Length: 226
Image (cartoon, rainbow, N blue to C red; front, side, top):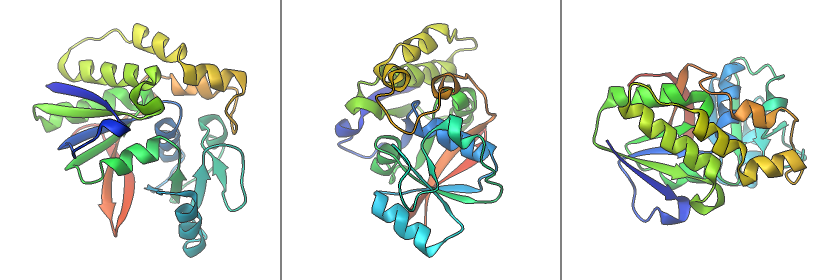
């Protein structure tokens, strides 16, 4: 399998198969939302769209990056989200990198969203689907975020290798700028456990597939096979 690793600004054409990677923290949060019972996650293009969707569907749960804000129910933190009961709920998510990356490849024939917590399930899904090329969208820092690149490279290796040592990839992610900013309180809406939760390898057994539904980009959990 040929793997390409591109930042969002480098997506000059729609790839057939895209894996959107945002380890810290959008894709990790999405996985936790499904683990807490969410039925689906709607990826909003802007905070205003997220709030408009919430206004039309008051039972939906809206979350965003940064500190708590009026109209939003939660923030983009796995440590904070894991205490919520989302059984059967729809979540509306707007973040600065992960949701932007997914929307940038919304016309691809297959869009997966991934982090370390669903790495093996994502690789298994790609193996089951077959195909000769995958584009990994490295969402953070215009494609330079090492936590996202490390995760993308690890998943790409897992697609083709029987055994892959994850330690080096996880160390890179743990030493990344994003991890440092979370640890130092540069980013808001943070739980002390967020970094550790983002680096939990294969915590969840499902892949996450995004498709267009009624003009919205909707993410759903999927068994880790095509």
